[in-house]
Image (cartoon, rainbow, N blue to C red; front, side, top):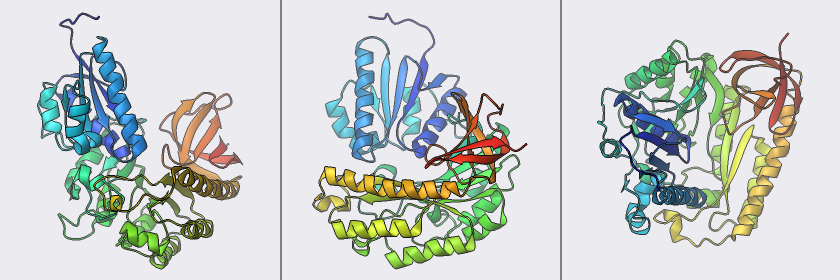
Length: 434
């Protein structure tokens, strides 16, 4: 067993789950650094902080397994302490304390000061959004609000993140300037619901005004929007998108389903007709806009007829980007009162069918890009390729533009014009413009 010594502690932050968790871990790391603590991200350290996800079954399982693995390391003397924070801890703290008591302490999503105290650090209020970014240096996730007021039947996020709380525009501008001074060129706006931004503090939907303030930040090249709710979408956002070159012609708008029966049960506050009209309005107001959405299959009561309607609609709408999840039956949600009546195997079949349709659509849309030139950013080098993205693509979830590193040299974070020479269903191959 390793003998404990008086050497300086190194805190290893492990991040699981979504981009909101990435942001939270980065803020935690920034606070620790300001307290002169040695902190690393997903490396080796004798003190481990696990930022967990509690959204759906797979994520919860990964979080629990990660906790158990680190408890085993603690018992083996490889590490000294294990702390757990994030959504799983917020939602299931009493159960976790009972089932995995060897964790040193559990903290919820709003207990950063208490977590810092346990790590012998002070919460510094003056660190307005300052953080240690863990993404490639050219982009950063940029959280504009916390929590959610939407009543979606399947979603446990309000249980874990609380009510919607917008961050004031002046604070966000300061954060953006700080990020830009550190070399960040792309802000990826995230929230549980971007379109709700401002209703609590400005008494109106204020996303457009926020965008107009952020485009003035020197050094920022791209501003990308993720997670916009369709109901009550403020169309003035599209006017800003159209008039401001820094705002990417890109929108992530999770729609979940299209059958009126399922939308009503999901408590989405919209209909197939309204949703279809909204998307057509997007494409009319911003020609060439890239629309990303996510869908849920296997929701309670989803019949084969509902699923066929969804498939036909996906084929009709031809989304540029689409992801599909299988329904997860979450306790304490409204949908948990319903019978989870679609077998797991059937859920997986439906998900695969949707993604097969989308793969074909993506391939066809990508073939149209061959021979065309796009402004792209280079995120990293991987093997024999430089890996970049166009304005139409978000990191990790969308198309990648690959450039042969044996023929060309490019710099990470560089914006460069690339001509597409070949296209697959989710990858584009390109060369720099000569």
